[in-house]
Length: 227
Ligand code: DC
Image (cartoon, rainbow, N blue to C red; front, top):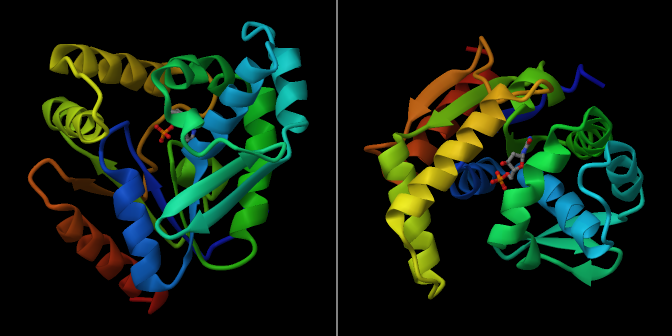
């Protein structure tokens, strides 16, 4: 399974622009798109919905194995269904976001989701984004990218997203939340966020999304043409 190669792996911290950029790269290359964060979000939503004790790793693993997750790309968004409920919006609430770390540090939960991710990636050329794609999920990916941006810029983008959705934002709070997530993502014992040794670093702080897309598409084209 770890031999799956037809993958563009895009990792990076929260707010670096991964989803938007990765989806557009997939479109440009004609590849499938896989948002692995949506899987951790769906598992968290399901555990909360079922009233599972989030501090009980065995119960979280059991719930994850039973959630009947289905992801479908639909007009530029990932439709996420859990046991037939469409949770595409519900998985993006601050309550879910705050609890994800209870699941994403569980080796059992990760093993189940990584297996699903590999099954998806084995169906054909795929752009996959997350935290451990180039390091753990698809270590043989032909093209690996680590997308980064300054914390100020990531907070600004997140705040803009909330404002667009009509939600009140306190930029200092958004920045603090991002800092906490960075720390949790980078310091957890299993599959922490880190740049794979062979990943290209792209700092998007001063780039438009399209510039980042163009840079990744160029890297992917040269990887696939064997140059
Ligand atoms: O990319 P996102 O914000 O939707 O991801 C939500 C959380 O899921 C993120 O804080 C860490 C976790 N995650 C992970 O541990 N491994 C992945 N491959 C993707 C996401």
